[in-house]
Structure formats: structure tokens, C-alpha cells
Image (cartoon, rainbow over all chains, first blue to last red; front, side, top):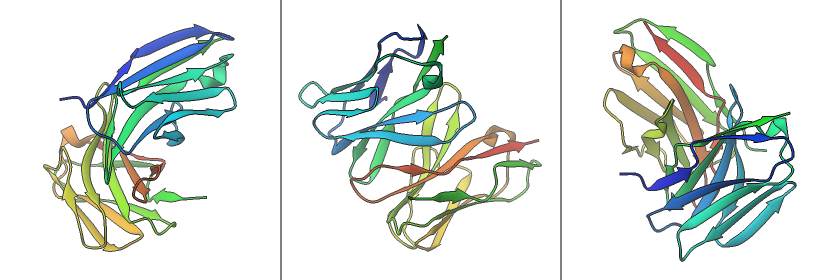
Length: 107
Length: 111
């Protein structure tokens, strides 16, 4: 069973393109998280959302609680955005993770 | 800034050895987790702990045990390492309803 589904699994974009990664979940949540992992690197938290929208620089995360869906947008993508992006949901003490979206931004 | 420190970045062990992976966090977080990360499978929960001396099995606890004697330290133990335990192991900590903070991971190879 997959409590969290992400799409696409892999994404290649040209520098400057607008990117969207989608996440759907099937459980009741207290919050949704977007995480980033660069090749060979650790995992860092980008956003924690329980409603609406958050923005940090060129990254925007939105969540629709009724539809159990979230999106991560990257505007004006750059090669340094190349990483795996992971959606995770928080149900109290537990977290459930998507399998990640591998993004490659080509100069 | 929260720091989650894993004792080793790379580890090579032989089949049958007992392996200890240590994790320390410095922010007084109640919750600590051990995950393994494998290509195509994402992050899978091995064990978690929400308090000292408390532990709960995750999705894949077989072949592993844990110890949490102090709030800041959560240890993962492979009683008898096997080749199918070759993986990236990630420790994380959090407060309830707060973001997860990850360590840099330990890449374990069992030969």
C-alpha cells in the first residue's frame, strides 16, 4: 500500500523552465512536507504545510486538503535545483514518504 | 540550528558481524527515527522512538533492533549483518507536528 504517491518519478527540464511536482496522499494528515536531497547529500526540509500555500525564493508549495493533493513548483529552474524531491505526510508521530521525484535541470 | 549526527558516513562490515549505528540529536526532540533508503523504494521506516526507552516497530524491523537509553541518542543494531542489509541508513528527529531533521546518512556495505 502506498499512502503517498508522487508524480512524475523522473523529470528533465531546461534551465529557466517552470516545474511542477505532484503529490497525492490517502491518509488523514496533520501536515505535509516537501524534502530535497541532492546527489550524495543529506535530506533537508523545504516546506511544512497544513493548508494553503508557502513560498521560499523560487519554490512554491501548495496543498488542497479536501482533494488530498499537494504541488511543489519551481520557477525559473536552475541546474542547482537538480535533486530528488520527496513528499512526506505527518500523521501525529509517524511519517509516510513518497518514492521521490528525480529532477535534472539542464543548462 | 538542529543538528542530527550519525557516527559514520561509510561502513563496511562482513556477513554475520554485529553492527551498531549511532545517532545523536542536539535539540531535545522527543521523536527519533531510523530509515533505510534504497533506489526505487524510497525511505522505509525501520524503528522509531517517541521517548526514552520507548520503541515502536516500523515497516521493516526484521533483522534490526534499537536502543534509546538517553533522549538525545538513538542506536540501530544489526544483530547479524546480511548482504541484503546493504543500504543507506538515515536517522531523523522531530518534535510532534514539526519538520523532520535528518542526519547525513550512513552508507553500509555488508560483504
